[in-house]
Length: 138
Ligand SMILES: [Zn+2]
Image (cartoon, rainbow, N blue to C red; front, side, top):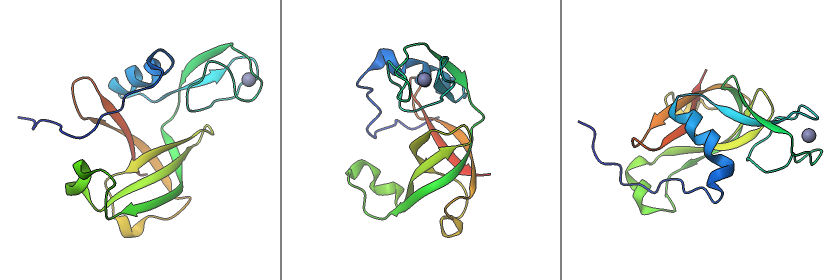
C-alpha cells in the first residue's frame, strides 16, 4: 500500500498551457511544444514560439533522451518536506531535441554524475493526479 505523498506538488500558473505536458507525463510520455512554422521545440510551454512568435504550435512526443547540463547535490533542502530525501540531485537537463528543463536525477550513483553524461526520462507517479518527470543515467 502506497504511503500518502506529503510533499509540495506542482501547481501550474497556466494550467491550460501546460495541461498536455502533465497529461502526457501521466501516460509516461514526455511531450514538448513545437512550433509548426519554424520547427522549434521549446520548454516551458508558452502561447507563442519564443523564436519566431508564431502561435502555430503542436505538442510532440520527444525521445526522453537527454544530457546532464548542470546539477547540484542538495544536502540542505529549502523546503522541510524534502528533508528525508537528502542528498538529492537538482539538475538542469538538456533534451536531445533541444529544450532544457529542471528536474531531479534519480537512480544511480550521485558521485558518478558528470556534466554532459547521457540520461533518460523516468516517470514518478507521486499521486494518482500527478506524475513527475525525472531522469536517470542512461
Ligand atoms: Zn517558431
